[in-house]
Length: 288
Image (cartoon, rainbow, N blue to C red; front, side, top):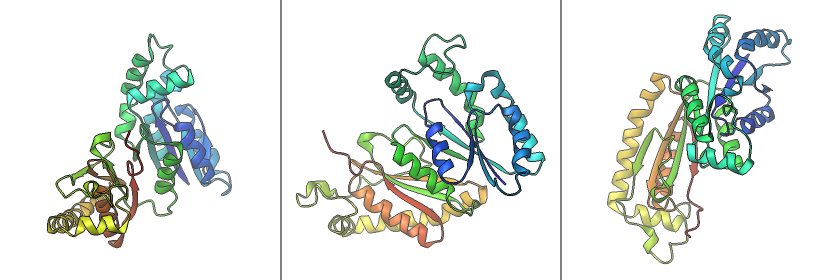
């Protein structure tokens, strides 16, 4: 029996995540009181195999009841039931914007707070212990619903849950650092295809751009050294028990150099037998 606890900031996309998990065959329960987690797990265990994957959404809507989450999870563990925690996070400014757009009330606005900002701050403090214990953390600040779906599929669709999932992401420094990155590499030191007219509107996934970037000795040397570094580092993360590693590679706009290096390093790690996802956050953004 597989148990997944879904929690995180209100407005960060927990309902959307639950919908995706349900599509993947999880039996989903929303807003379950933490005290009922162990009892509900017993019911699932008696389903005769009809239920084998369960996702339970637990968050601040439970108010004071949320404080009993870890006691319930400890009871789950004592009953020899394995569980993981998925935490959905989001920047405060984005959460505020989402609440203003939907005109929905934050669940903690009735807890003596006078504004959405105060409610978000209070909730972040309440949920911090859960975030620290989370098996997976997804920052949805810059994700569309489709991108969130892809991330969840990348993490949970595999049957082997013991292997590290490596997310190699290209990005543009001009659009900000990915807040969930574990390792960040800057390739702005390399010659920029943006200034070559015939390459300017192509991306690092196009062969002419890749050929241009890798024709320089400093590019090939940097790629080799980063590959060596990751070959040494990644087994250490596996030994530590880490289940998710985000490697972010940035250039100025996230369209050329970082994309080439993300593709190359992602393939290098995949060839080493790791489970790798490659995505390009800013590759298709249009300059305004």
